[in-house]
Length: 166
Image (cartoon, rainbow, N blue to C red):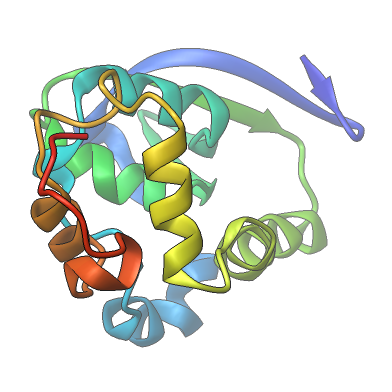
């Protein structure tokens, strides 16, 4: 597959063979201190992880037997928390990227995607969660558990009502 002049091949690789590209080094401290909206990966189903990997892929450069990711940091972190390190995972392998293109991928991964996909108000998340069918994405979870997973009180994303299963 070719995206914006970048050739991408899909490969199945052991999770343990994936490392962060050294282009993330200046941001390493920042990444350890960032508070992400969703924190409890135990609420996600394996099907949700599969969808995440397909639509927010881990984009890598191959270096010998190792794969250095240049995009898909959150996907990688979530996958590493959900599956065994010996498990095979789908990655996109990019070929022949310049340092500038690598930096652009890393910057987009760290900033652009969060800005584009981020919700301004947590109440909007509650509206989405009440509107869509979440059974295939989240393990059986109460509204309280989902609110806790996004670090807020239940009433912040779910107006006062019964504590129904989502």
